Image (cartoon, rainbow, N blue to C red; front, side, top):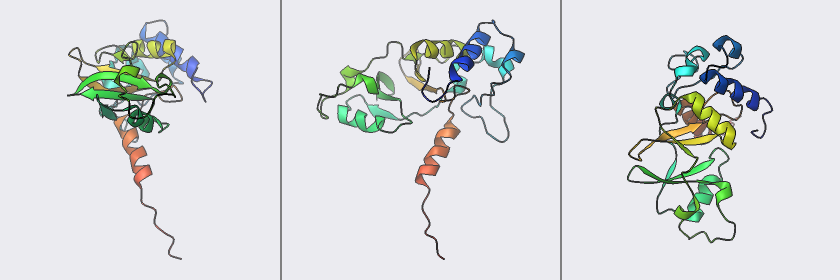
Length: 193
């Protein structure tokens, strides 16, 4: 289902089934997701357990400030953003409202970098409301083969990005994104010996 993880399909199916009542929470103990945008690794607080996954809403599992580009962004800007293997979707936003979502496969190779990117994306099948159940989102992700869904409020404003981890056993958090940024930005200190 997702490259690099043979168990992700089983885990997603089990999590999705839990949200619809097909499985009992104790049957999913092998899945230990660090859900929640405020979950801390050490102290736990803020994460969602398997027992309450069935009633968890998408807004509790989003990256709250995903990378975005202006609605006027060029194909070249989108290509640059998507060159980062952690970025699966370019979000074009105007005045806080989602304009479109672009994935790598949406970009034609024969279009010059200076062409506006807006017309090459879509929001169809790529968005979800913040109050939707996490289990519903998991099912939609599984059906589409996507690991990202844009969270959008009724008025079109961006609410965040739901990012299923490669392993399929949890969602990326704001803390995960910050940790990755710190690791990339960590200064290299030469060995003084």
